[in-house]
Length: 368
Image (tube, rainbow, N blue to C red; front, side):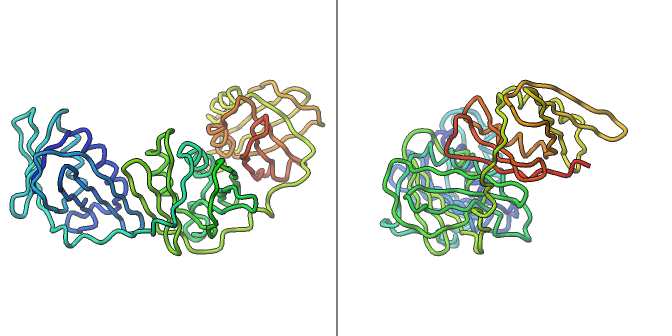
C-alpha cells in the first residue's frame, strides 16, 4: 500500500479516530486504526467495540492495499509534522511516513487489515434524516445532565423517543436534575423504539457536527447509527429501563422569577469561589425585585452578590448546587431565564423566556 495526501486532512481524521479508540496498548489491534487505500480515497476506520467510526479522505499516487497501525503514535507523528503533502508507504511489516517539506522519516509496525473487526451496519431503509444543527442543539441541551454513576447504568446516556405528536424527545437525568428537549424538525420521522444513547458517541457528535446539512439516523435492536458528511458513526445502545421522567416534571408551579442570563452567570462565577467543594451549595434569596446569591466556605470566607430580577411573590431562599444552574445557563439560547417553583424545598424548573422547547429541572438542597 502507498499513497500521498495532505497532512492536515489526514491528521484531522486520525485525531478523530483516536477519540474513539479507548485502548493505548500498542500490542492490541483495538488500539490500531484501519487504513485502506483504493482509487483516489483512503478509508479510515476505528472502533472500541462499542463505538465505531468510518470516514475517508482524498489521496493520490495510490498503490491499493490495507493495514492497521497504532493510532496513538500515528496521531503524535502527524501532529509534529509541518503542513503539506505526506507520503505513506507500506514496507513488509511496517509503514514509512515521509513529509515532502522535511528530511524526516518515521516508521511504525503494522498489523494486517484482515485481522481488524468488521464494523456494524444498518439497513438503508432504517435511516431517517433531520437537520444537523437542530439535532446537535438537542444533544447540547441534555448531555451534561447524564449520570456518571455506573451502578445506575440505565442513566449513563441520553434517552431518546418519538413522541405521540411525531416530535423527537431527548431526556437525561442523574437523579438530582433532569434535562428535557423536544423538536419536531419540520420533517416526517418514522416510528422507532425508545433508546438510551451513551454519552461517548453523543460527545463525539457534538464536536464534529456542522450547523449545515442533515444527519441521517438509524436505530436497530442493539445499536444506533449516524451518517453526516463523510462520516459513519455507530454505538451500542444502553440496555435497561430509563426512569419515567414524566412523573418528575413539576406541575402547577405558581411562583417564578425572571433574570438576565449574563448577569446570573457572572454572579455565579464570582460567588462560586466560596462554595463548599463537596456540596457546591449556593443560596438564592428572593426579595422584591432582587435576587441575592451567597455562599460560604467554612473558616475561609464568604461571598454575596445582589442582582436585579422580576419577582412578585413572598420572600424565599432556595439552596442549589451552583453547577446545576451554571450548566443549563451556558446552553440557554435566549437572554432571559425563568425559574419556576412552588416551594423552596421542592423541584425548580429552569426555562428560557420566552418559553421554548426545552427545560431543566433541579432538586434543591437542604438550607441548614
